[in-house]
Image (cartoon, rainbow, N blue to C red; front, side, top):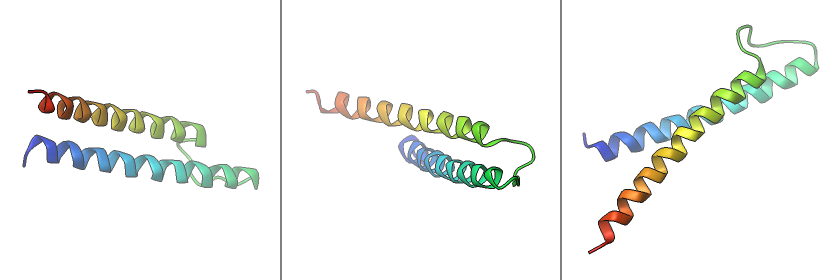
Length: 75
């Protein structure tokens, strides 16, 4: 497995994970409005923090890939 494929898979996994965490945070917030809780360990804001961290890693990996592509084009 090449490094490019590994980076692509990790990037997709992190992107999907960030949206799952975002969905869980929204569901938790809606449950909190109704005086319920779904997750005992983490509050909705903490889940959003984790989602943002994952998205920052995805952005960093995409920028790295774009930089490598631009370097490859120069003669």
